[in-house]
Image (tube, rainbow, N blue to C red; front, side, top):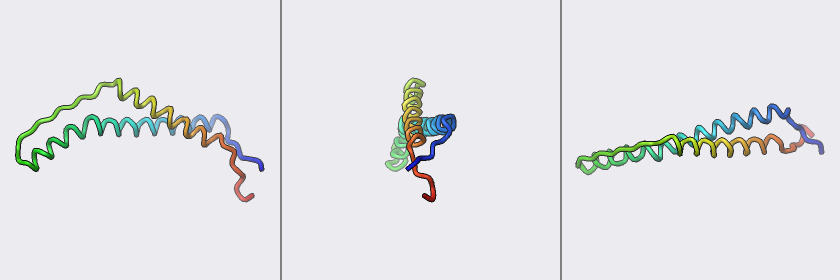
Length: 92
């Protein structure tokens, strides 16, 4: 059976967009884990127990860029593989 192939330019474009989406999602998840949770959880615990508490967190750009790079490569590869697979034509 013959497969339908997309224009190679469209395959790369879709893969790049998927890579950017996965990179953005990976960065948001990392920032939530590394920055928001360490600030919010002690605050909530101090409110529940009635004791005072303080928290601090910081994020450098190195890990965020590394996670964005890995996320982009993973998303690009995933979409590129999907775009280059041979699929049967619809209705046949």
